[in-house]
Image (cartoon, rainbow, N blue to C red; front, side, top):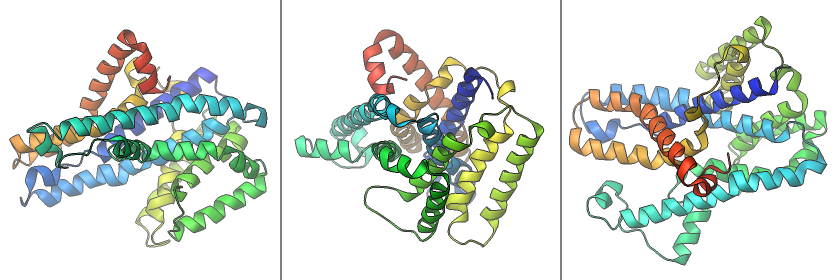
Length: 341
């Protein structure tokens, strides 16, 4: 088994990579800059490839890692400690960030110029609107991911009751995959998220020797095989409607994990460890930068392409600087915003 420090370093690297991809998912700006320009189709196609094809492995990758880490060494007696930990790392920042986003939109919608960029009219201010916005992440759309993680954490007793029986859990994943393929919708819980999380949880309970084992050529070849299979399923007309939604998004990050030699990964830099803060803050900043510059520089096709490519760099720079400053100057606030990470 790889040592714990190398394993955690690999988790940080993958979290950082997925965070970069999430920024690209939300950075598409072709329509904002180019309108009906003849270059629009090419720019949009390029951005969709990086954001909607490559980038779409990011959130499934986060669910896979979250499920793995929660059920890694899981025992019934440790459930209370797991729940307490997730209150600090999930629930508290969920409430704090959604409140900040709501208040930011309320204030911004009343400021000349800013309101025009936001394009949402005047946001209502009051207790009912605030509670609704916070609980339903109305102005912080990316926190649907955190909302799902909170639900999955609450459901831990039921999930572990199934997962602790290996054959039952495998059967459950197959059944779940069937319902995902059928497009089944149930209240509150996203079945795609449950599937990704469940695969990670199963790996945390039964696949640690393979997942955390010493890197080898055999593991690298397994990773390459998963990539090839993922691409084949993605471009194949069979099974229609699911290849790009599930198989591709599971096999690609898992294959990348097996292919990557944790022993050769450099130690993650401090600014690479602010991934949650980056995830939480990037959405509003990306929209603000894109909409503002589109008003000033719209119509020139290289601008949206270069800005799109540079957006992760800008977001990482900002989150690193802001996170480092808050960690030193206002550690209590930083703890709330970053979930004690």
